[in-house]
Image (cartoon, rainbow, N blue to C red; front, side, top):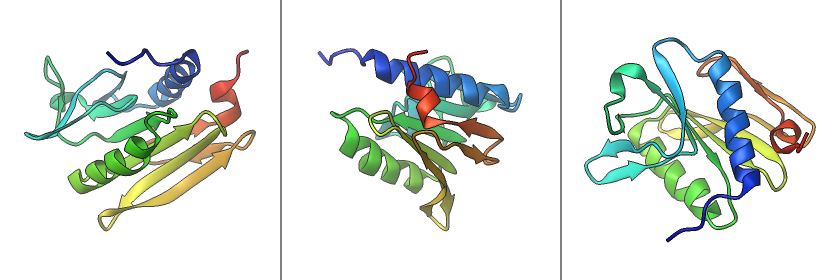
Length: 148
């Protein structure tokens, strides 16, 4: 059995979900893990936060490419989140992939361009990112991890 995520990880997931939900379009839904994202018969991922089109959600999973996938990096999943999931999502055509590292803290917002992810915005500590893709979201790494 895998250990449960740490409170810091879950705090960040909850705050990212709240920020993403504010301007999430009505035809989409933002959900926290665990939600299976079925990219292909042999490829199922579970992002920490996923935004998918409502029509793509079934009773059991999000079937197809998400609008946005967000990973909150854990020490034990760093390579999986930054390399494996990133490559699988890019290959499937996921237009937006964000990585949040609560240990820096930092936020990296990536967008798919010509089959590869490019950096849209990045911020550390008290800086903030403000993106318009896939819809307006503002995140401050320091606020995501704060115990306030």
